[in-house]
Image 1 (cartoon, rainbow, N blue to C red):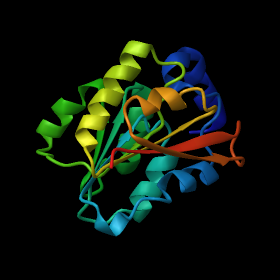
Image 2: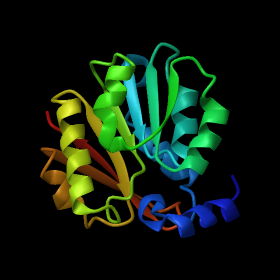
Image 3: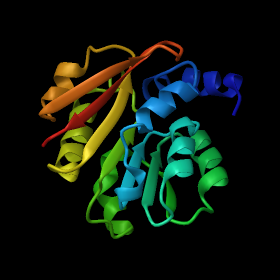
Length: 186
């Protein structure tokens, strides 16, 4: 998908697309950097969009690792499904992250090690964000890790209401620069 198509999707759905340009390769690499791919059984991506993070995950994941990518935008979903839907243990889901419980049952998943998120929490409603993060923290428990990015640190205290430990790092090679948040409940 080129930048023009991405901008069109942003114009159509600004609250859920959340950015005017796709994330950079530098941001994608920083998002997956802390993941020990050889030691995990399941990971999920919330809001993969055009698949910049998905590319990094698919390239690095172990063949036996189950990977679910949940995308609400139909245009992005169709593109992702065409590109990755045929891969073993990769499931592209057209739906809302709010229904994560249903997808886990559907694929008989009991434990999730990592969740990588491209969701724009600053533009989602407080109710939606709270519902998603509450389910995410419960799902990951004391051993899992939630990795997300935002364009500012304004949501840091909000993330702290669901996770005990928050670490963040700035990625300048992105338009605009972004913060990667690593969230855990050890």
